[in-house]
Length: 310
Image (cartoon, rainbow, N blue to C red; front, side, top):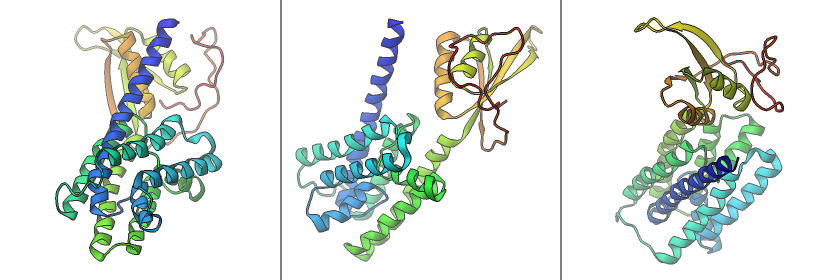
């Protein structure tokens, strides 16, 4: 029990370390490229660049205030849909910006060209966002706005983020010249393409086919821990004509990561194939009841089998 708790704590610490590194990259891209460019490419930091002209406050202060306001609005409108990672990112990002403001005051353009600054921003911020999205996290800010729009306007997350980002880009017309406005719009468009790629990658399902010596433990984990469904096929290996069973399940990205981590722990020799699933139609089913005479191992409490994905 103690070993399991220690392992879980280590996982959380590694997650926080990975998120912190990603947020440091995002903050660096904002401070060294976005702010010197003067553009407002789809982000809360872009909105802070506009508001700075009216308030005289620093970008880090404005970003912190905006993120806190959005978090409060998010909790009021969407409840607990916003997890600890969103809160962590929303607070840490402006702290990193404040760190750069103190360490490199009056930082000018590194490229000496506004267009190159925007291109460099999109490239570097994508690295940080890639790490965050692969860890099922976000940088907060516009993600919160997108979730609120998704809930009340029934818009896709990607479309909601693009719309919110474009509104910020167009707002730069209040304080910027025509070139800066155009660069803000183009930067938002190309940044949106990258975000869409990672967002759709997150929502896309994965079909996982598993042949393992620990088939029963794998089946129990999928049913009891992931609360997912699965299909079991009888198969025969061509090499030795050995009869085996193949377990097939469809999971989202977060469930996939948990499943792969579990498989690595219990059976390093498991044969696994993974396919992308772009669309799925099914009828949701109620709680799973084991077949007569069979008891599924695991805890006796908790919902299970909300849908049979096999």
